[in-house]
Image 1 (cartoon, each protein chain N blue to C red):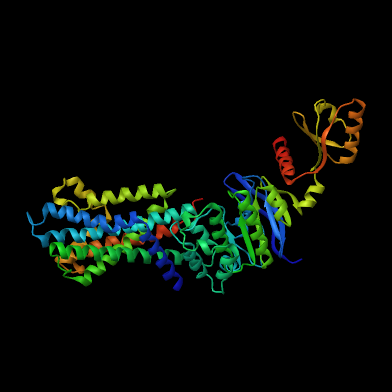
Image 2: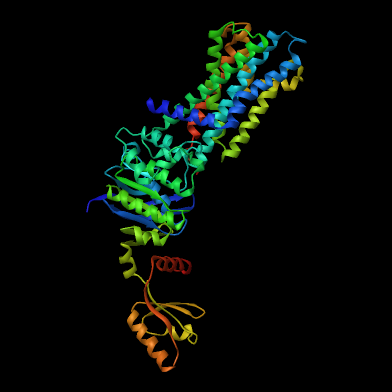
Length: 246
Length: 303
């Protein structure tokens, strides 16, 4: 246990030493909300209604960012540069490495979520989630779905660049097509169907819903789909996980 | 002497390529054992099978009484491995790395004495990516030896180091041996094998071609030559002299490989005396492992 905590702590420190990852994870979403806020908030919708739309959505986007970049791409680069191989010849058990990275990912994500929420509360009178217990469950379900999903997809990459490319592709697709930035009902019918293939769609629906409308029990379908993605991904990720590039 | 590693008939293929074919040898406690051979000869593959990272297709391996591919965790507590050109986290400071890797072992680790031995004191707060090649090697060597491993595996420990750093690395490796580790290393620098290793195994195309102490290998095999300079000799005339095995000529420089240096030298002198040909810089040379290396490589190409 101490090893996992130590490793997670060390990885968290590494994360903060990398200015780019700090920018994309913590500042980029805040800037985006601020940009959209200056377009919409106070004009067509009230500040609070705007924030209830956008803050949960970008918290959802940050689950994608964390799982694809903080976890997936970093592990791909560790695989390429031999960091994981070096662990392989120590008594450190493989599951502890994954546990440490998952733990670190959760910590980083939590910080970014709190940051977004506080920003929303200060700038746009965001309320705390109405069904906060449900929101926490929704977040947990989303993490269970996305972490292994991203680990599996990035482990298909031959090297770090390929992993980063896969990650960027998924992140951009999901940002624009799952309702995080543009309301889905503004989009053509076809794209609305496409949105429903993307897992982030369900995350955002759950987060927005539990924030202001109904408890998690009303979102059984979303929870089911995400848990399904999680189970399949855990299976695939452990089946295809490799410790070295060769 | 007690054997700490025994390998018998080891075989490994990757697809259609046979990387290792029927390799057998043993490593004795307390020695520095070198596996040498050209790039792609199967050195790393052999090493990784002994370390338990790769599973052999055939053959048996015994390391400290354990079967590596089956008892990897037990083995990892007792061995240390420095991989070929692997890295640690780029942004990790040296002291953080030492601290982190220490936490992987249950037993007492020797961080303090290693810092002193490797001179890492001044680099403790430097992040890994800012270190030069030589320092990176020192750090990864430290990480591999934290737990005072009984066997230390070093894959190309001096690759990419300048001659000075390489000599320092040799001194360190010898010190680690004196501190009680058996050392197994791979290299393609023949000088390294000659000066550092107690015994070497030469691997070519996945097979062991020669095994023994460096001086034994040099005595047993064609590796002795006489060298001189002369303007008026040609290779063809010299080839028929008694004892001559092979001649390398580079303008006026001659290297004659012979199984009887004295006899060959006698005939060269007599021939040149009769014909009044002048010889310069004549000397007997003990060949190097380099010559042996080239010899096997040529044999390979012909065969």
